[in-house]
Structure formats: C-alpha cells, structure tokens
Amino acid sequence: MPSIGIVGAGISGLHLALRLRQRGLPTTVYTDRLPEEVAAGRLENGVIRFASTLARERALGVDHWNQPEYGWYGARLTSAGELPLDFIGRAEQPGQGVDFRLYLPRLMRDLTERGGVLKRMPLDIESILRLETRHDLVVVASGGRSAGELFPRDPDRSPFTSPQRRLCLGLYAGIEPMAEGVMLFQACPGIGEIFSGRFLHPEGLAHSIMIEAIPGGPLEHLTRLSYVDDRAAFRRELLTILAEHAPGLRERVSERDFDVVRPTDLLQGGITPTVRRGWARLPGGRYALALGDAWVTNDPIVAQGANFGSRCAFVLADAIMAGPPFDEAFCRAVELEMWQVGRPATEWSNAFLGPPQPHLIDLLIAANTDQRVADAYLTNFNDPFKQWEILSTPESTSAWLKGFARESADA
Image (cartoon, rainbow, N blue to C red):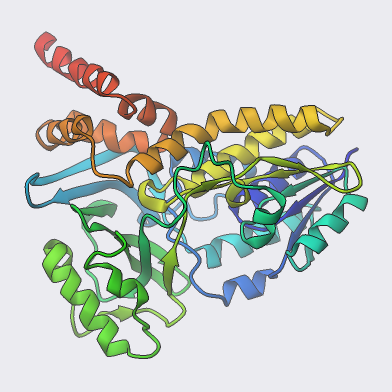
C-alpha cells in the first residue's frame, strides 16, 4: 500500500491521518511538538467546531467531548449606531468550543493507539523535502514559513496583502455565561467585532473573548498591549472596551474575579487571509499537497477555518484511497475538488471583512424581526455552501428572504 507522510498535527492533519488509518493505510504524522508539549503550550485559537465537523469526529470515533454543557447552541447578534440589532438565532444542531491544548493531544493519542505513527521533526523546508524519499505522497498541513516557501500565494484568490483585523483572544474567569450556551457576536461598525462564549479549558469551562480590531481603530491598542508586562493595565483596557462597545457583556463580568485564567491563555496578532497553490513538485519528482492552513488561511470572523480543514481532510482521504499514481494530474484534480469545498468559506470570510453590503443589512434586519430568519442564518454557519449561495449576491439574498414571506402568506 502507498505510504503517506503528513506534516503537521493540527485538526486537518490529524483528521486526515485518522481517516486513512480507519481505512487501513500506513500513515505517519510529523510534528514539531509532542502531545505533552501541545498540552503545556500557549492558547492556539478559539475554534468553534460546527455540527458537520462533530459528525466527522463521530465517524472517526474521536467525539470525546459530547457532553451538553460543552455545546454552543446559538448566537446573540447585537449592534448599535445606525443599525440597531439585537436578536438570538438558534442552530438546528449544536457546535462546540474545546481548547486545542485538550483536543490535539487526545487525537494524537488516538492516532498512535490505532497504529498510526507520530514523529517529532522540525517543520522547516529542508526537513519536509527529505520526506520525499520516505513516502509516496507528502501532505503539508501546517502553515508558517515552510508552507509559504513550498506553496506560493495565489494572487487571484488572495485579495489581501495585509491583515484586515488585529486579534486579541483570551480565555477568562469571572464572566457569567449567557443562558443555554449562546455565544455573543457584538458588531462594532467601523472598528471591528467582539465575540464571546463558553469554552472548555484544561481547568474546566472558561469564557472566551475575541476582539477583532480593524487596524488603526480604537480596538487595536488592546491587541498590542502586553498582559505579562502590565496585567492591571491590560484588564483596565479590556473592561473599558467592553463597557463602551459591548455593555451587555460587561454587565456579566465580575470585576473582582475577572482575569485571564492563566498567562498562557492569551493570543494576540494578525492574520493575512491567503490562498496558496495547492500542490508542488518535489526535487526528486514526487509531489506534495497543501492542506488546512498550509493551503488556505482565513480570518476567523465567520469561524470557518478548522471546519474547512476537517472537511478537506475527508475529501483528500477519499482521493488517496482511490489509489495512485500521485502525480501532477492527481494533485490538480484534488486541488480542484477541495477548492469546491473551500471557495464558499473563503469568499464568505473575505466578504465579511469589509463594510456590510446592503443585501446583508436587509437580511439582518429581517432576522431582527423574524425568528425563522434568525435561526436559519445561524444554522447555515454549519453549511458554508448554502450560506454563501444565499449571501453572495443581492438577488440570492432577496430570493431567500422572499421564501419566508411566502411561508407567512400561506400560513
């Protein structure tokens, strides 16, 4: 059977490896951090895994966190200013937020217990190129400098050359949760967004707050303020931002108890949304495929990155199991098939980084007054194909909303 080498032990690399092992294929995952190092590391992200990803985890037998108290059942979207909004949409099936310092080590152990191989290796370009002599196909599922060197940026699919948001993500104690596992999405027109919801931390349930700051705006200062250097100043600045821009969240904060759970539970920086070429010919004539963040890096504004990576991992596993040759034609065909999965999530994410278009405003106004629209809009975060089909043009949004109006008229 062909040998597959997977570089990177994130969600896309591990879902691919587990799927291939499930089908009996020899698989080796190369990582620069072993499970105990990931568990002891810094916060990596604030991923919400939607229902379709949870279904793939059940298919893989790795649904280790299926308790109801870990679920994300909907979102409250609020906005002030010229477009006052305040509505709760409820998803048909729950999502889930689990710290990847819990999630990834557990899946690494699942892989090795099922006969997969986990090897420590520097994830630099030289080490990746040497894998060509060991494997029939190399899959690179880890972003960073090596991915950029191996897979050049695709300018036709990458409209941005700099971060469109600066991020400050933390896990906090001292916040009263919203009822029934509802997440907050606070729109701050012209300056960014604030997201908040419960999150399973290594020490128990915590509360995530993610600030998405438009560069140059009043929220950006927090994304550059060092918590380690001045903990009190960081807390004051965050509480001031919440009081001014997310007062409902601020009211649920206990000032006495509020703080980052641990100093390692804070992540700050910026992401430039990028699509890279999906494959590369290696010096010896074999090929490498890009997967996950090595191929497409999206801003987390609509929470699609990890879900997209998992979805593509299953697409790639099916293609690999169909058999070699893993040649250029194979790589081109797989990239095209994965892009059918990736394009809606990518274009949707990129569109939401700009000012809201009039047809999106129409949809949000409808959701503010019609619970059916609100619930369908939130449910479709689990289905980027349907969501982007609705949101991509004024005509498609209008047709979708008219469907609800017809249902009301027929009732």
